[in-house]
Length: 470
Image (cartoon, rainbow, N blue to C red; front, side, top):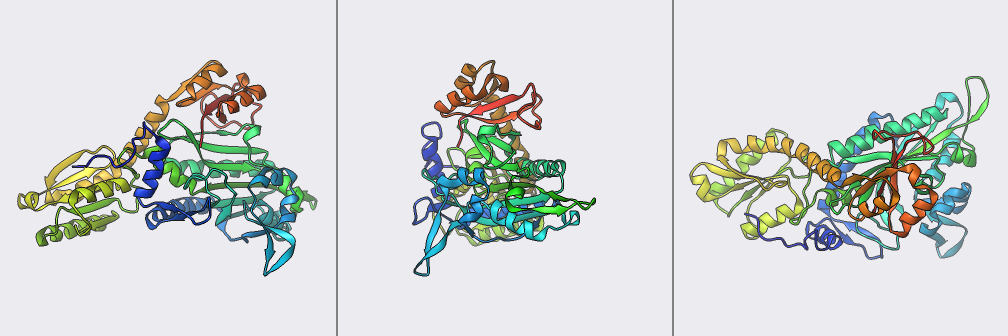
């Protein structure tokens, strides 16, 4: 039986609840420099599984992993004026090294369009070199004034893809492919978070982009979180870095480039999209431990039964763990595993075991079943599959129940206090965006009326998704 909540309830103070979950589930700690974070082993295990799932999809999309330097000459950023202007307030700049002032300041990587552009220009000569599809897993630094672990930190981990193409059509098609087949597929099938897919209005685009596509998820407090983005960069960076290729006709032509990324912000989104007043709830596809087998107390027969359950689970391909009872009372340990969000637990106690029984509990609903020992591992394995779909459905139901179509900007502002508003884009405009920002709201994305992705913000009949956001 689960004990009382040891967290501030979500409906009382959601930000406080979030901070407590990150700490008590042993996800992360604040680093010694303001805005930095130490990702603890459990939090990092979740990030590793996110990495693995996204990396697999990136490689299926044809991109290859590489690595580029952390330090970037300041002059590189200055080559693309809109880019440097967009990042200037967030830059960390090195002016001294080896005890001497540097001849040219060095920027600590905020993103890598500039340094990768420099090498694309070196590596691309002919149309035969295209498309060039690169990705890197790295850390980046963007000086954050209002840090919050995983959501906003001065240093964070991410992947950033960068590609070069012979035509605008090829670049656009590849950016969309990444958005749908990598990010959207991962978010729904692994993270169990449904998102609204759309493009950013010009005011919200990535600095230097001609188009930005986004996946916007709803958190349990009704706010939006930008989960991943894909950018069409046109020829802006190719022009700045002289990324030319010789066409089949022998003409020298500028490339079209893209960039796209997802970060450790996904861990924050995972917490806020699924967690409850007892802590994390992890989708089984992502959970480092899918089933925990708990010994109610240290007892030879109980521990033997626990190990047998573990063996059956691992043989079935389930990621399992045995809690042998050495780390405190049974109630305390149940609370700890619920805090960590393990999808399923099997509880093995001497009284039930004497009758040939154990208990199987699912984390998402709290449903508890008492079953024969021989059937427990099979039931737990089945629940691992069932819980994944149930969590996606629950998140979609929550999102849809708090998304309302309204007829004007006033209605959008009212609805977006606690959810998402859908309003005709034509009824927003520049003045409307300014008014929304005065209310701490933004247009999160633009969609067609059927929810599909538009090519640009000039299409007629577009719908704006309005919300508060992280």
